[in-house]
Image 1 (cartoon, rainbow, N blue to C red):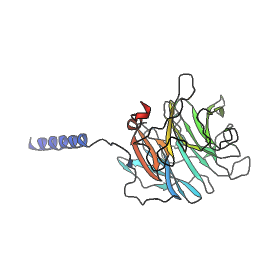
Image 2: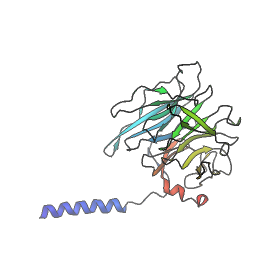
Image 3: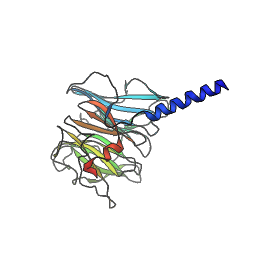
Image 4: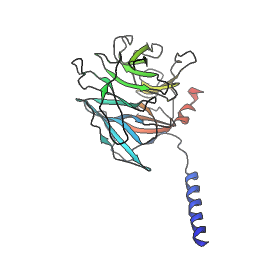
Length: 289
């Protein structure tokens, strides 16, 4: 009886401690205590698979960019490890496809059908123990310009970023695509209602396909760059983008949005430092009410 009582006491104490832990009131660092990066050495665009066991993010250093992966065992994450995927000097913009679980990413690897050093969207699958063979996605997304990221919702809606001329000549902008009956990605429209004369990049779409986050230099803004959001209307168009303000954005530079597997956490970068914040805190911002 004494042993059982002690076990019950310990269990109750752990539960109380867990429940009494204050909920985050703002962004927190994903790697607390890590060396502060400079403007040519930063991390961003963290993505997490649906069951929350794999995280991948971009780390830039100078003119190079590489993807790093982490795997969770129990409650412990492995140390970030550089991924062995096709690339020459730029490997970035990873995003787990919420429809089929595969990983989409941007790489400057040589395309099978043409020469060039531009970025294109490729796809690779995780079989539970290892990554398979990576290949460029089929369709008309990839061009001779840079395609930097593609985020896919569970309903098959893709939001991608490109600097192709069709982006109103504004440089990097957002486009929407869906797969045809062969599985090839076909551009549905360029999101002129969202694109700005300044760069719009690092897009992330929620699993239900009804909200996107992306970074932009447009105004009004709190810092040099802020993360903005837009929601999909019933007719399929996107609402005017809104700056959620604090606590997501600040006087620093915020960019590189990504989402946790359960959709409850928004990942982002603040001056190159990877951060996380409960999505509900972002959506409670005064500008979104």
